[in-house]
Amino acid sequence: MADIQDKTKLGSPSPGSSPRLARKEASPTPSGGGGVSPFSQRKREAETLQEAITATALPGDPPLLPGELLSFIAHDITYLDPFLGARTGSLYITDYKMYFKSPSDDKAEEYILHVPLGVISHVEKMGRSRSKGENAYGLEIFCKDMRTLKFAHKQETHGRRGMYERLQIVSFPISYGKNPFAYSFKQSYPTNGWEVYDPVRELKRLSVGAENVPWRISETNSDYSMCETYPTILGVPASVNDETLVLASQFRSKGRMPVLSWLHPVTHASITRSSQPLVGASRKRSKEDEDYLSAILKANKYGKKLYVMDARPKINAYANIAMGGGYELDEAYPNMDFSFLDIGNIHVMRDSLSKLQDICYPDVDDQRWYSSLEATHWLDHIKTVLGGAVKVAEVIERQRSSVLVHCTDGWDRTAQLTALAMLMLDPFYRTIQGFEIVVEKEWISFGHKFSQRLGHGDRNHSDDQRAPIFLQFIDCVWQMTVQFPYAFEFNEHFLVTILDHLYSCLFGTFIGNCEKQREKLKVRVKTMSLWSFINSQLEIYKNPLYTESIQQVLFPSASIRKLELWKGYYLRWNPRMRPQEAEFERCRHLQVLIKLLREKCQELQEQQQRESQIATVVA
Image (tube, rainbow, N blue to C red):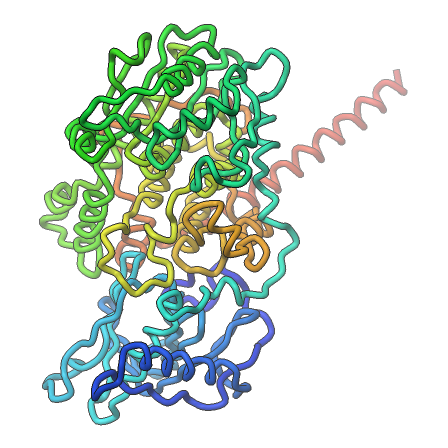
């Protein structure tokens, strides 16, 4: 998303031809009360919005994307920038973004603030109509990308109510029975991002179904009857029939039985993923589940054990026994090694990010920075997640044994571990296309609950199911790119762009909680893919230091001494913490230099060949 004071940030969708705009400023909707039911109030607000967005245009409005409609305009609004001071200007709210513009004057340049509405977590009123003091009356907007924005209003105009109510409607469309803006976005791209990932093609790339490979492609879940949150195409041991698959799934939480994530091309050591077994206080067992895990073990002729890595702390796994869950019993699964990776749950991670946000924006306390950062435990969690993935990769590569990864339901910590381990083991996933496939496969297809974890379009910001699980994964990937700067085709700007559009709701990539739900929502039919946008301008996301010949397995250090806070993401809104030259600008300059050097090398080689031919003729 565009930065403050930056009209056109490289990599952001370009504004298209102006669509319809509101003919006049929409009237503020009345507050509830006086016998008006919440349902009637919501209906009236929705009708007001519909009337505004179907009106025609006025000139002079902010740049709009194809399909974007203006729904609110307010003038003489003051934005309280925590770094550059107060700026007064006009505020425009569309069905996609909040756009503030302050014109240039003798003292300051033109000032622009651009915030996609999907980034907004919640809006609170600041001060009262009789509050005294300059800029004491207005709105405070809390964002999911580390920012908190403050706007001051003049008390005598009573303009705050209109802005507040309009933001509620357009920022949280799901709560008002509307679709996210991704369903209205009409931009076209030269590539179709929905075609990046094909499950059958990816499984065949891993040699699943090939001769002498003990794994097959299963369509047992084609109607989602076996597991609602799994995809329709699965990789399973060739020795296991479909009936056993169905019975084994009944012993796993949410029906998420072990399925293939990755297969070693030589040893056939596998990474599989699942949810917890339904052991419960009565210590139940399942012959089908036990046989199924035994089949995974036998599918790797080099491994003498199947390593079962439970992402949870052991005490949490114990607690789940009382709720019908638990972990694999030693006596039920011979020739298997069990371990707990001590990764905290979603509530721990959410609390940690909240503490990190407090110390990163708006003020950074230099004197207490390190102690404050330590108190957030954010890097401790990054260490635990990254360290767990290293353990998975080490067992696969060094011990040539297979690994089963699971947590409680197998869609949060499990996805972190399998995806990171795959990046370490397979250089294909370290390319731009390969990374897109990892995200599609391990996160989107296998049912990470993006809409619930991120709260897309939902005004219930206090929902305890929200958590920064995918953000942690991307942070761990960034840590790997720092330790291995030549091994990844993509740069930091690529990762930041993914996180920006994780929240923006401009694309349909991260909308929905599972494949079944996305089919119902017709996401692939009615929205654009983020990969369409990225793959149409690949050069700005490429790492100029990438060396394709680096094919070895990566084992990053998970030591706290090696880990860093990702300043390019968490502190990017603070102008005092930004590098003078943006990372992607440096990459672009290096790419130009590399291109010139290659052209010069080619020219010298051709010159050498001509001179050699002349020398031969003369001789």
